[in-house]
Image (tube, rainbow, N blue to C red; front, side, top):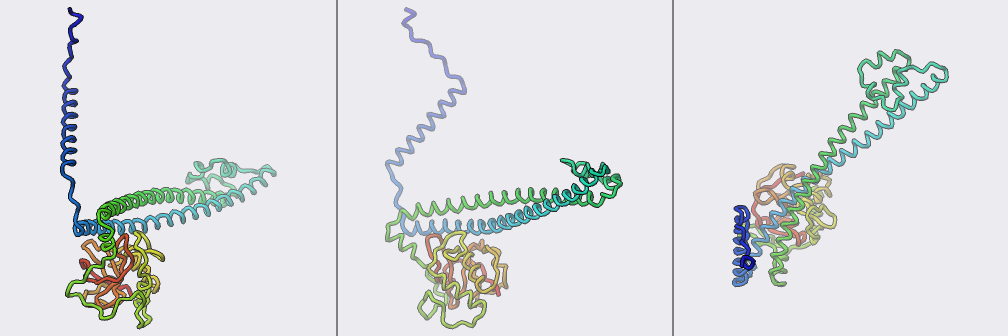
Amino acid sequence: MASHRKPRQRPLSGGTARTTAATLALAGAATATAFEGTSQADPRPTPSQVKSEVDRLYEEAEAATEQYNGAKEKADEAERALTGLREETARKTDQLNSARSALGTLAASQYRSGSLGTAVQLALAADPQEYLSQASFITRAGDRNAAGISTVRRRLDEVGKLREQAAGQLADLRAKQDELSAHKAVIEDKLTAAKRLLAKLTAEERAAYEAETPAASPAAPQSSTPQSSTPPPASDGSRAARAVAFAYGAIGKPYVWGATGPGSFDCSGLTQAAWRSAGVSLPRTTYTQINAGRRVSRDQLAPGDLVFFYSGVTHVGLYIGNGQMIHAPRPGSTVRLAPVDSMPWAGASRPA
């Protein structure tokens, strides 16, 4: 009869029991969530809700873009410095090789005459660095080759120092490239989230959003002339006028984050390019451009002034007069005219 008994089951150990209980609890929660999801679908967001959230994401993406622009500028500087160090190292290495070659020619002559000194033999060895690094080398050499040996030693020291500097510069460059990648990932995440939200709109709603130019507040001064994509006829030939003319010529070109022209721009890339066309060099980012010129108050604005927005100074446009600016608003849009009052004011500066 014993052979027909059911085998006795061993009790679960404490750890196994806890793991099983946790797994069942999670499964139950997942099932409940699944049922809730099937019983009540998320309501479709209204166009105003989508606009509000997309605007927030674009603002955050633009802030990350300016951080990216700043990091890229530093990375470019580090790369130029590294290239310079490598070129200088190559020049010094050539000089070292020339010095050793000259010493070798002299040594060959001495060898043929049977007068090759110990110091020369050491300087021409496969690895003379250890011996050459000793401070007493020249005085111990005690022969007429001291000047040539001193030159070799100096060149070796120069090449060694340059290689150390290049190694440090390379590490700095890699750190800045990592920072670039981090900012790029943030930008792309924000833009991807914005695209997902915009996809919830109808074609008509999305077209309305993309074409939208924020309305000015009632207090904003308005131009009495129709807006045009061509420069105003009157120009005094000043740098500011040339910068404004460039901005007018950029109207209609697409916004692309990180772009500085000529075919596309981000906000600070547009203002930098506009003033560059007038012979004025501006820094790359909004938060450096605001300090690049003389600060002006809002009631003192003149065409060509840089106008900045948001608490973090993350957006910039070029003032053209009559309460209007030209700016590159956001991804998916183009360079366009807009009222200065259409965004939260942060300040203004005059480059020239």
